[in-house]
Each structure stands twice: as C-alpha cells, then as structure tokens.
Amino acid sequence: EVIYFIGSDPKDIGDLGAEVNFMIGPKGQEEDHIFSVPTAVVIPKGVWHCPMVTLKFEKPFLCMAVSLTTKYEFHYAGEQ
Image 1 (cartoon, rainbow, N blue to C red):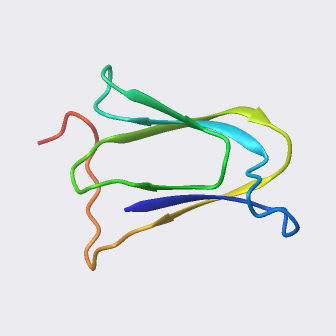
Image 2 (cartoon, one colour; image 1 turned 120 degrees about the horizontal axis):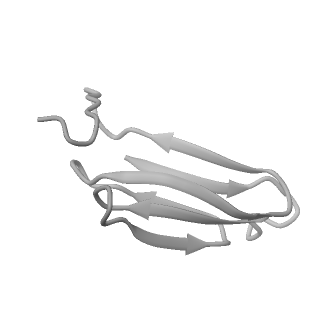
Image 3 (cartoon, rainbow, N blue to C red; image 1 turned 120 degrees about the vertical axis):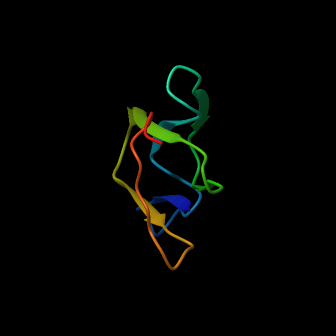
C-alpha cells in the first residue's frame, strides 16, 4: 500500500499546507513519522499503520491510499 499526502496549491506543489504525524507499528509500539512536505508513505504487506493525526493545518491537503495488490484483505489488530 502507498499513501500519498499531496498539497492542494497548484502554484506551490512543494507545500503540503499541514504537518502530519503518521504512525507505523503495532498498537503500543507505534513509531511517529512527522512531515510537513508532500510525502508518499510505502507500507509493506503485514506492517500495521495508523492512526494519522494532523498536528498543524494551514490549508486543505489530499490523502490518497493506493493498494498495490489484486486482492484486498482486512484484519483488525489482534486477530489471527
């Protein structure tokens, strides 16, 4: 899965317009990944991720998740 964070200002594509904390890792062991520029987050299969929190907001931004598989499966944390 790839999650894209894209700014909405067509005159400044390098401006996300926000600061985001994207957390990766199992519950209770999440690592914070904080960014304020347009970013693509690549999540390998089986890696737990989220929540994501907008820490600062100046203008709207786009967040788009793209699945890179032909089959989608969803499992809650703690399920086998």
